Length: 201
Image (tube, rainbow, N blue to C red; front, side, top):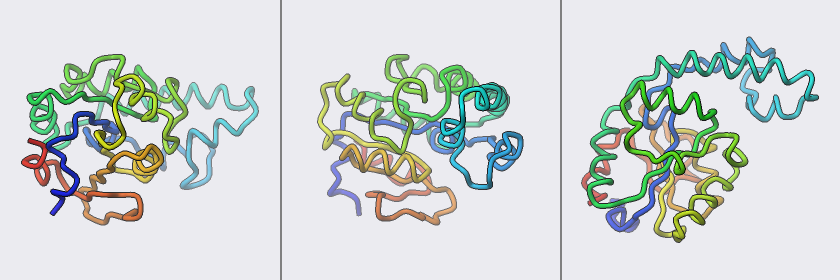
């Protein structure tokens, strides 16, 4: 069904972390409540819009909550097998996340994924303008000297897909529930990695 995307020929793969490679324990409703934000407010953007003196203690609180939830993350079904298959054929692997690097490192360690991703190929929210901006993907393309049509962005949320679409790469939406709410920015929609494992070569 998705043969036209030539996934077996794509050599550069960028993954979101929470909800994609891992099953996130983050309770965003709780986090927003603790930070005094409106329901469904984009957390990073809301804090960035505040005066610095108002935002500073909230950033500290957010970092503490994210580190707490990071230790409770679990591995997404099929993620290890999928990454192993990609690495076996020499694909480059990266992470692009709206988390901080300490949270990313704690999450990867908790889920046993840390050996798949070189440090310089992990971009957190302080490394580039956060998703939905395509800046992080463009940075990785420059770092790899890769073409957009040889690159894939995999994520579970709108911002991942918008970032991928903005950078001109193929987008894969992983949604365990199968709702696939954003078809306009998703090239491929899957409920689990096993659906495309055979297609990556």
